[in-house]
Length: 242
Image (cartoon, rainbow, N blue to C red; front, side, top):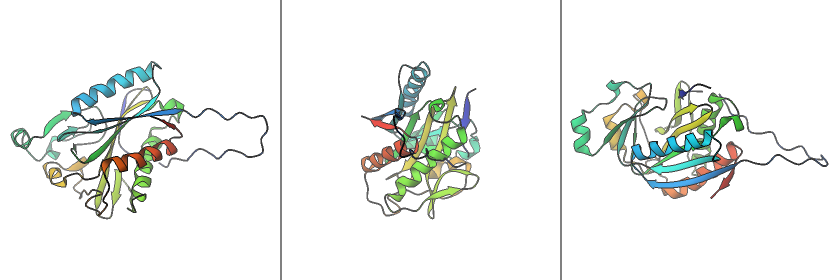
C-alpha cells in the first residue's frame, strides 16, 4: 500500500464471538499491544520516535504499540492544511510560546498542548483489517466509548472526522499509513486550555471546541488514559502489554 494521509470514514464491526461447543479447536493467539506513556515531549521529538517505531514495525522487529504523550504548545499542519486556517503570525505564535510544525498526517491545522491526551498507534493493519476507513472509525469508537465512561454523550458528525459533543468537538483525528503501518492518531481534550484554539481554525472547521473539564468532568489525564487504553485494546482485538 502506498503512503496515505487520511482523515474521513465507515463502521468498524467487532470480531465475531467465539462459537461454543467446538471440540479440539485452539483459538488463534491474541496479538499484543504495548502501551507506552511518553509523558510530556516536544512534537518534533515524538514525530521522530514514531518514525523509528514505524520503520521497526515494518521490519517485524517490534509488535503493535500505542504511544501516549502530552505536547507543549504546538500548532501542526497536516498534508491537507491551508495556511489561512492559522490565524496568528509566526511572531505572535513565538511570543505566545507556541511552536509550529509541518507533518505528514492527514487533516488540516490543529493544536496540541498541556492537558491534552494524544495517542499515536503504531499498528500493522495487515494483522487487523486492510481497511483504512474502518481504522479511523475504530479510533472514533474508542473515543466515543471512553467518553461514555465519564457520562459524556459523544458521536460522529457527517463529513467531519473526529468526535463531537453537543458543546463542540472534543477530539481530533489525523492519521498516516505507510505499507499498512499506522502513525499519528488522535488528540482528546481533557483539561486543555481552550483559549489556545483561538489561534487556528481547528481542522479547517469554524466550529466550537470543548474539553472534558469544560463539560464538567473532573478526571485526570491518567484516569482517562487508562480507560482509553482498555477500549482501544477491545475495539482492535489486542491484548494490552505493559
